[in-house]
Image 1: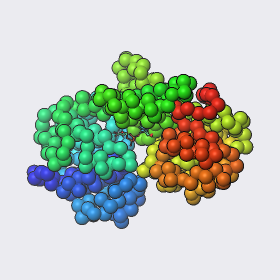
Image 2: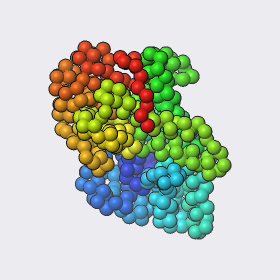
Image 3: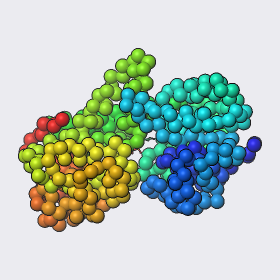
Image 4: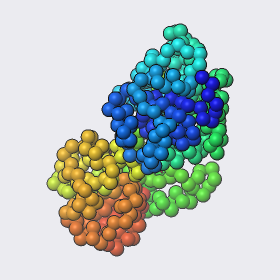
Length: 441
Ligand code: UDX
C-alpha cells in the first residue's frame, strides 16, 4: 500500500468537528478519505449529505468532494484503503479533570497487528499518551503499528479556513516512515511544519491552549480593574497589542471563554501537572477568573435592577462563540442557571444554537428573533457576539423593552450609540454610569 503522495488516501476515525474538517480538508487537497464513526445514524446521514454540525464552508466542501469521501462504521474499510489513520475521537474531561481516553483506547484496541499502518493522533490528549499507546501496541503484539502526534489547532467557526491555512503544522514522531508521510500530506499547504518528538508535540498543543486561555483571563482581570478605575479595556488592549511581544489577538475582554477546548485542555494540563507532582498555580487562577467572569453579569444586572426575582432577562446569543452551534462550556449555561436561581425568567435567542441549547437549558423561553427576545424585557444581555446583534435597531429595541438596561457581555456595541437610544450601557471593563458592582459569586 505505497500510495503516492500528496494524494495519499487516508482514514479518519471520528467524524466530529475535528474529524470531519480534517476529512473534508484532505479531500480538498486531493486525498480519498475513509471516514469512520461508531455512530451509525451519523454515518448514514453523512452518506446522504447531512452534516451533523454547523460549521461555515464545511457542508459545501463535503458536497464538493462526495466522490472522495467514503463513510463507514467499519474500521476495516479505512485499514484496507489507507495506511495513515487520523484519530479524531472525543477526549472529554472526566470528573477529576483528567482527559477521558476511553474512545482513544477503543480505537487502539480495534487495530489489528500491522507493519504498514500508523495512528496519527489529532485528538487533544495528555502528554504521554503516545508513549502509553505504543506500550499498549507492544503488549498486544502490534508493535509494527506506528504512532504520530499531529495536534489540531483549528478554531470552530473558521475550521475549514484554519485547516487550509494553518499557522503551523506540528508533527511528533519516532523518525520512521509515518511522520514523513504525514509531513508529505501537509507539504502542499503554505505553512511551517514543526517536526519534533511525540511528547513535545503533545505538549505544544496543551501549552498553546493554556497560554491563549491565560491571555483571555488576564485581559478579563485587566477589564475588571478598568471597571474600578474608569479606564476602558478596549483602549488598554489596543495600546498593549501594538507591542510585538504581546500582539493584538486574544485580548478581547468578555464574560469568559468556553468551548470544547480551552476549559477542558486547561484543566487537563493542570491535572497532568498535578499527577506528576507539580502544582501549576497559574492555571488554577486562569480557571477561577473565568468562572467568576461569567458571574459578574449577575452583579451588573442587580446593580440596576435590584432583586432579579420576576425580572424578564433577554439573552442574545447562547453558543460559546459566534459562527458555531456549539454549546459546550458556553457562558450562557452558567448565566441561565444563575439567573433562574435568582428568580428571573429567561428569553433566549441564538441564530443557530437553539437546537443544541434546548438540550442543556430548561425553563427558558426560546424566541425566533432578537427582537422577539427583547420585547418586554427588563434587561438585555449580549452573551455571544453574533454579527447580527451589531445591526440591531437600538431605538426600536429600547422602545420594545420594559426596562432600559443593556449588558454587552462581549463589548461589541458602541456605548454612545446605545446611550443615545435611551438605554443604560454596561460593558466589560468599560466606563459605566453609577459605580462598580461587586461580583456576585
Ligand atoms: C480554541 C483554539 O483557538 C484552537 O486553536 C484549538 O484547536 C481549540 O480551542 P475554539 O474553542 O474553537 O478554538 O475557539 P476560540 O475562537 O479560540 O475561542 C475560545 C473562547 O475564548 C470563546 O469562548 C471566545 O469567546 C473566548 N475568547 C477568545 C475571548 O473571550 N476573548 C478573546 O480575545 C478570544
